[in-house]
Length: 244
Image 1: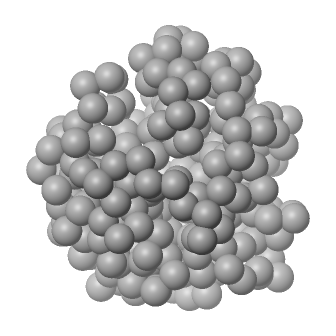
Image 2: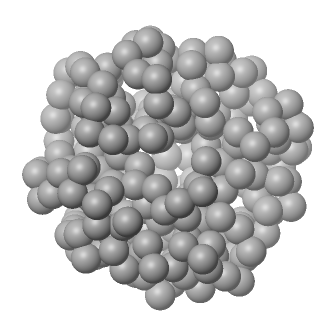
């Protein structure tokens, strides 16, 4: 994975439905589909190599809440599936893999319980992705509803030390807002942190993707795209073509 710049479509789950939030606010969720498996199948048919699945309910509850939908997605596609949201114990990490995850993304748990991150990376080498959610320069945890005292750089260093496959950095202020991505910031974090970085939040147009892809050799290995696809700003095939 990440042998070339990768466009990663997102499927955010709330109550078993595919939604997108506006700037991380659960109360501002737009429902796009009631059939996550069909959405995943369409993404794969359009060229997706990896699909990022977020259990929003799990992120708030602190344990997975949409495993049934995740299993349905796994049964529907052959491409890799990355699962995140509510993975705060090794048992929940194992449950996500048992439900068909090819990768898991761990965010809050790595901050609240560093030993979990180490254990997950040990049990599932090269299959754990760190998740850094940033609001106003600080980490947001527990479904983006609380802030941590750690900086973004602190968190990236922690993930690197544990041996994650990559780190996804989400700019919450831009997430779902289609206001554009902070390319310079993402590139700087990747270079200084010495990690494979996946950018997330704010993608609005194909130019955003093309610009990010030019930073591949500097460590920016992929991008998560959500609302722009669901709102038909561009198609997934167009996005993939833009980064080649």
